[in-house]
Length: 413
Image 1 (tube, rainbow, N blue to C red):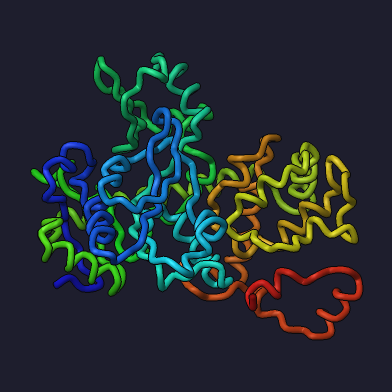
Image 2 (cartoon, rainbow, N blue to C red):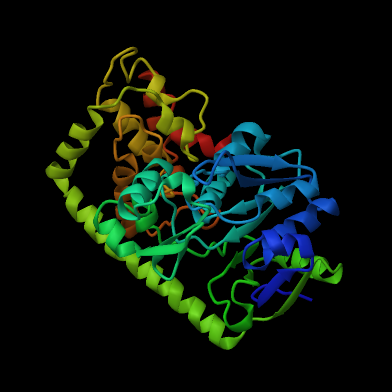
């Protein structure tokens, strides 16, 4: 019987899945078992589209279709949490299995505390994440740094500090530090990320800590909740997976890898935030960069924190309709709305057609507020500081001026 806190190595017992899956196929096998046995009604995950630079979200109800989702896509930069709110009614009427990176998981917690996702109906299987690479940049990087046609790449991975590609001729890897110092490598928000093992999910899975004869043939699984323990136990008892206790040396190595990734996150935070500057210097830089805004609302559409029907950035009392670029108030409203809850998913920057470094601006503010008030977004159901403001007179005053006080009200919807 699995229990919360257990650490095991797990692998699928399905021979066909073993051939296709990575790291023993435990994640795919667990989701397949859950779907076959009606523990979940559907599985939301990611699969390869036309090539390995094209990650597509997919909702699966046929267990056999899960075999097509096995493996990782480091050039996929999707965020699944907003999709659950937007297209699946927040899992209110269905039981859902979801594979999550750290930022997926954090986005789901932020939406859940705003009553937009029902986590009671969700099983989250977390996967270790060292970061992702923007698809367009990945193609340029492979062509220029690896001197390989991106279309010839059969597989890519991030391992042992390298970005590794596989072609018909073999493997070729370059140290991530070298790539990133030259403007390639992982997305900037991924470099700053300090949630590499999503232990707030029900199970936290990955290849970190798998050693010896099990390397590449098993998944390291941390049991993080009773829900996760129940799924792991039932799947093993049914013969869908096999497990063995994680070796002490593997646990130690797993901790060292995670520690190294966290130190790297500190390094990039210090560098990025220092270049952003402080006070007036920071303000002027943000104003200059956002002056390119075409008001497409892509940042708001993609953000896992933004969901309000009556968005303040569309309030004519605050933002002039049709003004391009919009007045800086447009950005101030958004920053104020999100600043203490940003999960550094990077979607606002990844999808910005004007290439405004929105994620950097937002993340820098979030970290400063976290230092001030101690609130860390996306790791539990604790409300952010601004959600606790309950000044009735201030609400009434803002209502008279045209503000709908959406930020404060959104936690009560």
